[in-house]
Image 1 (spheres, helix red, strand yellow):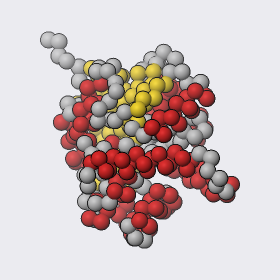
Image 2: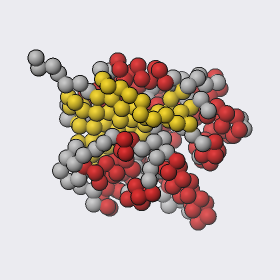
Image 3: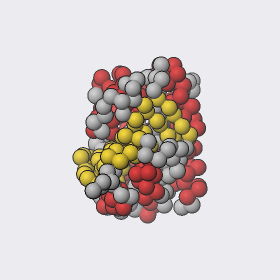
Length: 280
């Protein structure tokens, strides 16, 4: 698959997600069902009811595979960077923790996502959050300026994952921390999925083997790398995901086959640290 084609397909897919979440003339019943799925999916990947209720309406699009904010151990005054910030869900949760003395930066390559996130911030008075249009392989962020980096089910979409972690290492302060939730594989995908742009856009075809993912973090220079969580997605959650329903239809396979393949796809939570130079 051509990298430029993949990038444009991913942007188009997530722009469509934002537009569908807005006012689209959908029936009330369909809208209620989608909202219930998003709430259920949020709980399934680790968000509490309190967290789900605390963020602005329209910020949670049901696209995460974990709760990196809960695992990142944020504190007042931290500068936090979210790689692939979407409509701002995790940024708003982080903002509530770091407070006015802290700052949260969200970077996303989809203009519609950035526009939605900025609108959410303005409407709800989040003055310590800054959303920027950019690519996670080339971050619009200064070197050694961030205390904590989080990311939620986004790095798997990159066609150059080693570069993403190199950029993360560059912008972190010495002693800074990385906490990501992402999709990885325990075994290789069937060829009809690994070569599918549609499967790439829904966080499947772009995923790499667990060992390769952890090696990329290590090669970027990170230390104290640890897997703090690893989980499979419930089959009913896979069956209920609208994007996966579309994928099953596009590659002409039954949902039961996609659920079977899903057993080799896991949500991985990884923590790492940028070392402090030895002054001796």
